[in-house]
Image (cartoon, rainbow, N blue to C red; front, side, top):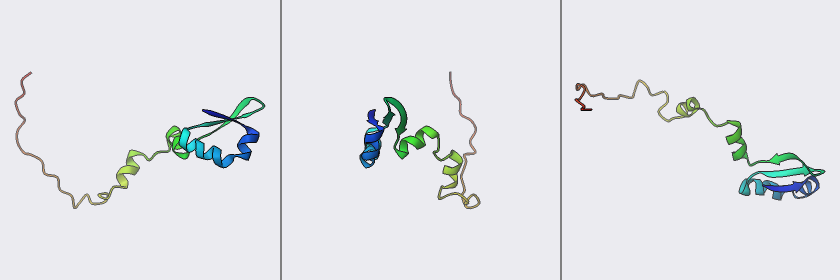
Length: 84
């Protein structure tokens, strides 16, 4: 993780943000003490759990709402013999 002094981080904010996206988290210090970390949006969403839920994913399916139109055929055959 790269470390930036607050003064340098303010002066080079655009570069700091680009590096957060390309190289990972960027640490910002004030008077030698770590006070903040700049993360890419992707890292933030992964860490904060803000990804879509399975329910949201299923509802976004192109097949959502077509329950009456979909037909799944099932086999009527008996169970098969399995030797253990």
